[in-house]
Image (cartoon, rainbow, N blue to C red; front, side, top):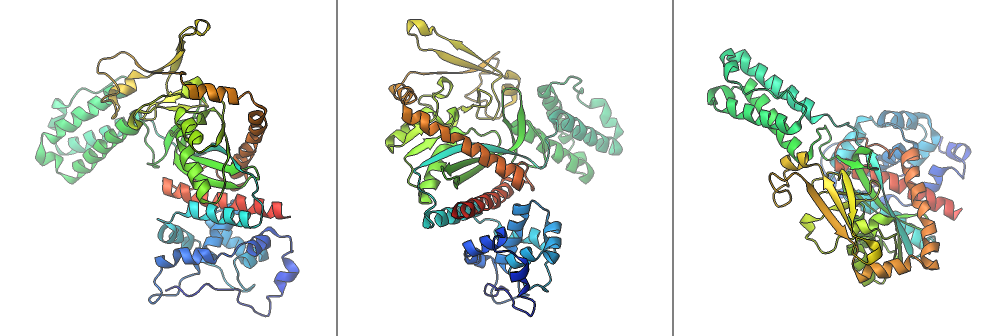
Length: 483
């Protein structure tokens, strides 16, 4: 049962807050800046208002999570600190002698109350609205970039996992019928993933050919687990407890396993939009969403500032249609021309390589055409055909038996010539000087508020973590600018 939003329960000790919590305390300023009843209104449908034990205020529960993000502490530590830290008690609207919740309640609140809510856009919209009302946002430009967060779980070697699970399946079979050993397919002794997948598939078929044996629970469970692992490996090439995380690339030689958060930010360093994706996604394709969300949140966008990842032809056309200046250096590698969305290869500007629809980075590139004699130059990207052979998206992309898989792009449109001319103007050069600000904001999110690594599994939890982190940095920025 949920009662109306609670307020501080005044007691004989309430006057301690005025003595102990300074007027310039961050938590006091946040409480004065924002009315948190919007959280109650957003979550009321998740509670029963007539039956059951009285629930803890959703506003207070949300504030516990906000304290976790502001001070980068665990559930247990934020509750423990709330027992004795008067600034925490003041922020939580508790009387000084009031008791705290059990830390396990925060996990339930995240899973039962916040799940399925678009918390990310809700919290960003709230802070941007406050910034506009306070007259803080005056600029008409946004800077865009992406920052990566590592998964809570590291990926495992697919080859090692397949071997371990096929071994367990064989042991389960031998425990019931050791005679099955004679007909087992020959094991793969190489380090080639394709051959290991072929062996596992042959093992599955051999055991399934004996229905009475394959239906015995001890065998069936391990058989199904191996089949699931084979399917996961063919689709993602990495295995992890975090099913939504993927491998992304920071450069041609370095990678990470986790998520990307694509951000848009004003010159005043207020984040106006965010989109969370798995790690392998390109930066450029998210620009239309970032622009749309920023506009919905009340930002009048006349200029977009970004790096070369955002200067794809589709983005140039979109900004040109809306009479928006795109301050992003043109790179021949990302001028894809007209292609079907399902066949689009994304450009990774950090690695200076294209990424195929399955998320695999090109292993090398070569440039053709003679610039001096006016030929259109073409960049050709080469992919690892061993991965292409077992890729679930190979139909229509990889020709069976081909020794190479390439993807070529060229620069050839008048729109590109227009952008090249814009790059030489003073307006472009002055606007591009603001791009460093979003790098600093990414650093703040990671170093001050724990956004360098996911604290839970799954993209929904990453979105929730992002919502609280961005809400925090926006509130801190608004308070600083108001001061």
